[in-house]
Image 1 (cartoon, helix red, strand yellow):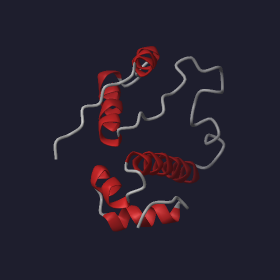
Image 2 (image 1 turned 90 degrees about the horizontal axis):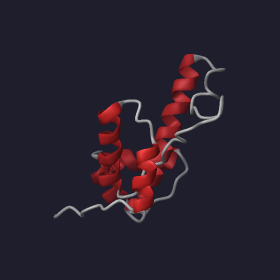
Image 3 (image 1 turned 120 degrees about the vertical axis):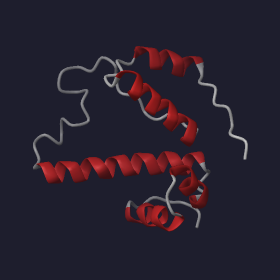
Image 4 (image 1 turned 180 degrees about the vertical axis):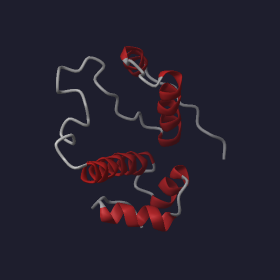
Length: 119
């Protein structure tokens, strides 16, 4: 299969330029790889967060480490799977191929998180 060329919109390019890219080129490359695989722009962080409002960790810092880590992993899984399912029009097999995991594994995760995908 020939990969589809992804051309970011002018709005997305402007948003990418506003980001701080704390991980430098590596973080930007990871973002662009996600865009290429999912064919849906992953969410971007607010480049100018107000105090106490910009971190995905703010609500997790009050919890024990294991509990916070579990919550963060679940948030990631949910976001990733929602984007993968959206990019594949709900086709679990196609989403699994893009994610590089077994269809059954992806299906179990989708079911565990209460998401919907075509069987």
